[in-house]
Image 1: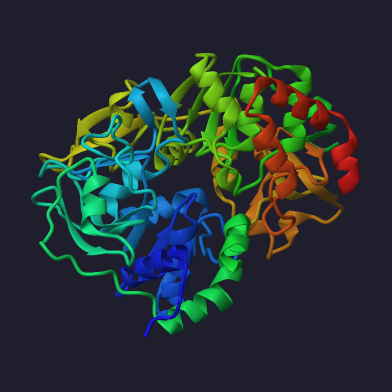
Image 2: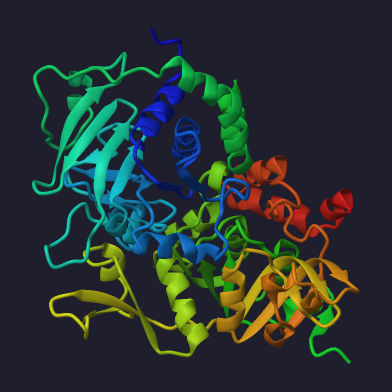
Length: 242
Length: 276
């Protein structure tokens, strides 16, 4: 039986499960939910998983400065990484820069961060965006911070692996450049996802419900994880506690 | 006679001329906020800011105060406190030009600057609109392997690097710990200006525990003492982010008038005195 949980706790646990089998996971800027998931996955792994949370000093073992994250990715030493996007389209292109015609944007977002590089190099890139609405899940992104797929001659050991939103979990077929809905979060429906997605994706007639967090995960999250994530994300840590 | 000039904050800020390219670190590794206050007081204009590799509160304030013509960055954000409001406003009003990059490109270009080589290759990027909007970045064929296009970036040598560090000794050696992008930055920049929490009588180069995390005086142009010099930002494990101060900035700076008022308070001496 699953215990009562918040939507944020569900997302953290969903992301943590997607990290099973990894040796090293890194979370980047503005990633409190992925950061919590990585720390939770490390607890569950019994300490075999290496985790580096950008913005943390205690849960971060980098000793070669800001470049180490990117060097690690190029060396193939990062198994999973998280990226988001103000816009995401059906080919898994992501846009972190803004809407409209660059450079005269209507709406400007922070910028591409490391996405234009990390998406190419990390084998298991998990797209994570809590807001699942037509303005996020668009037919075509206005600006490609990083493309979902590349031509065969482009060096690309990495790419999209899954996409997790506030409504469900998608897989991604790199050969066909197409998402497939794998599960719908409790309390939501396939219809709701279809109504809120601006691109086509594959799905079965009946889509399973995303498994709820188990008690062990929730206990870890509420005991040790929230204090650890608060070091890098004090506001989020406070919110998680309430 | 020390080979590194020790000076006060106004004199340090005075070493940055209008029109200079100024490299600034991310909020994870020592932002010289107290020195930035002096830059705003002096109204040093037409700067080309290079964020290593992203900017936050500091860059937003500099943009709002009209110091910046161009900003090269991978992102600008107030983190948990949301959008950088003056950056967004300046772009809307076309008061600044943003040169969009990606984090590893800025690190790599500085490494090329550090090595004195003209360019450096970098993976990724091909097929992005970041690359499409960077005429200064090129795609070449890997000379060692056929059919392997790869991006090359020109070396970056900023006129000035400005950041905050925990400790300097009297010789001008500066301890940075593991924030080694600051070392690369000091190698690549033509001048390096550093504010520090503390100046010690010890010899940092003589301490085997500390010396691997030291920028030798050779690379350091000038040092100013600035206790709580990163406030209101977090400074490693030395002090946390001042939530209230950053929150009040994020709220106030949504409007030009609110920004002016916040900066007015920031330029007055109370905030640091309260901390000291």
